[in-house]
Amino acid sequence: EVQLVESGGGLVQPGGSLRLSCAASGFTFSSYWMSWVRQAPGKGLEWVANIKQDGSEKYYVDSVKGRFTISRDNAKNSLYLQMNSLRAEDTAVYYCARVNILTVSFDYWGQGTLVTVSS
Amino acid sequence: QSALTQPASVSGSPGQSITISCTGTSSDVGGYNYVSWYQQHPGKAPKLMIYDVSNRPSGVSNRFSGSKSGNTASLTISGLQAEDEADYYCSSYTSSSTDVVFGGGTKLTVL
Image (tube, rainbow over all chains, first blue to last red; front, side, top):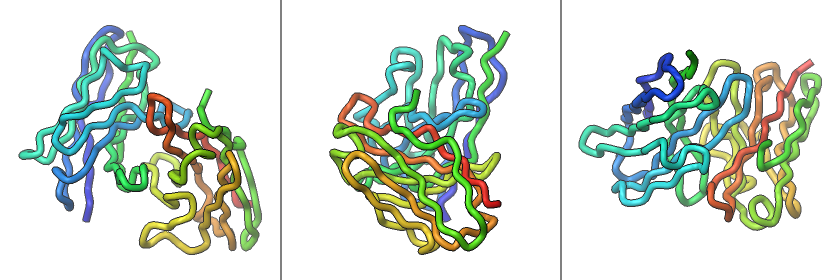
């Protein structure tokens, strides 16, 4: 059974940093692109970042470029999102999602972790 | 403002059929057959319901179907059931820098 479990969310002040983690199991993690998708309170879904199987390619939504870094450790079956210079508008539930690159869809999602940026 | 346009809400009675539209441009919905639909119950993670415009993942009820015409994709749910009440989001590959864009979401109410 595919499982994605996020952790690391919490309350952080504007300008602060946070590192999210996603532990994957039930599939060959190193064979899949992975993504972070976020959802602000009461709002819709927004793709945040993608990373290739070997970490050699990374893509970001414009609003987080230069502030967020996606990474992975295939030996630990883990995905990460380092978030720096956080802003109030980054407040959201952050989901880890497995990418089906052939269909450009997110076929499995974690339960999400809430990040709140507030003073 | 979301890149893909969905109605904010739709409703239907049990047993009826409803259709949710998702309108984009030739750079996303109209240009590629990479439209997906996700169901999200309150407080839960999204679930993939349709991919590649009209394909269902294993385990998804055949009451859910997808189609596309021009720049507009549609999700149809037939034989509405109470458990179908949820938010539904479309997404599409896009030739813009984001690669994937979502719709704003549609709240389905089963009356």
